[in-house]
Length: 169
Image (cartoon, rainbow, N blue to C red; front, top):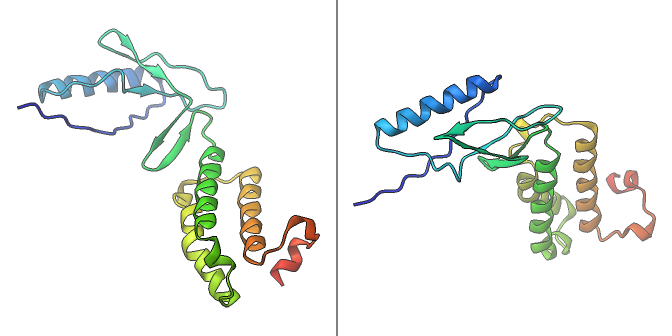
């Protein structure tokens, strides 16, 4: 009987040669347990201010270098920034808002609708936020999304020329 096991594993090292050693040890340990690493599905990524490729080998085959990958629901990028992750979370939260838009724009009490948005929409938008290091541009994306939510809730169009400060009062 064949059995297929799927492992998601991330190896982190400060130096390429240390990562290669870790990969070699993982490959050897897997073989002791009659397990093989699928080189086609295994990726490598260097996280750096000046991203460049790394040369990690398994069985004389070089691992494919990627610019980003998803791990535990978060998008990791080779520049170490979270902008892609934040934009992705905002897009998911906007989709959820639009899906339940009638609920957030109905005649329910405004305070109740705000609580619903904070509970439902913001939990989607901020999933994984405890691991984010926010830059000014990331904060701006989140603030813009917040205003987008409040404007939709109160049915205020951008052409209505209502200032953001007026929405919060």
